[in-house]
Length: 100
Image (tube, rainbow, N blue to C red; front, side):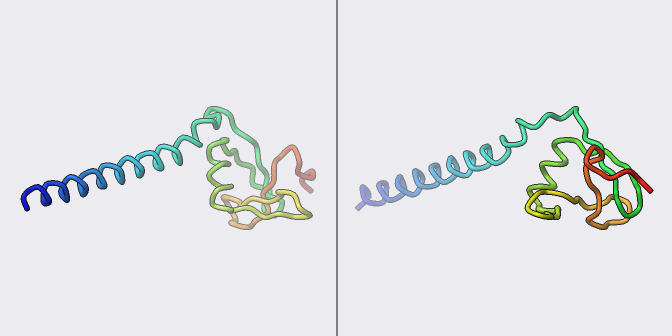
């Protein structure tokens, strides 16, 4: 009877160790995706509604894409949420029409 209890306890401990290892591996996998993004480079954006200009790092842009805070027009990524007015009207400055 004592042998069965030790075997059951051993199975529980091994199961918990496997669960912790799997959780750790999943955590490392999800966090490692941000390591490929250049952190010191920025892209210029301009809002077509309020003409506010701002910069986003590649890391910030990656996080915005993951949260899907974007607007797609004609099948291509076009607008981002403006930091000033909050409208989905900001686009890359090199793709934006000249300010009026």
